[in-house]
Image (tube, rainbow, N blue to C red; front, side, top):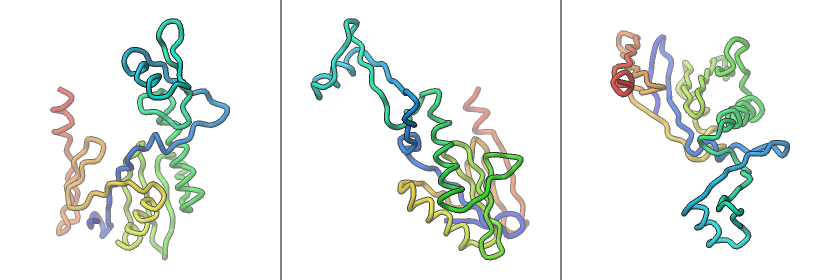
Length: 178
């Protein structure tokens, strides 16, 4: 599931599925969801503990981060930061808080993060694979991309093993934006 890139580095891109549901809402934070209409009525029918207010609204306190909530990305970032540093032994880059490094058998493994999308690289293939397996054991459902072409954050990166180059284009992203 890994490819060789510049200077003999192996690269994997990882997408963690259902990330916001993996981030616990701290006890001192209220993350409230307000709903009305058919969805609220269905909740009440399914569980009589729920009741609508006088305006037909249902308010729910979330235990986990919720996609679309303004604080969801920060809650997951805190969760991922804790995982990478405290569970996996990576150190956060002092200049970019979305980059983490760890030395494994004299090889530097680098993880670049953007919410639930990770780009992992190292010289030794085993070190990238080991990092992927650690992430899988923690987050269970992850999608790992293999091959010489990676679509990462709207950038299509084409790795050429022979010339040890990477061509990056954003045509697909630009066309979607237009």
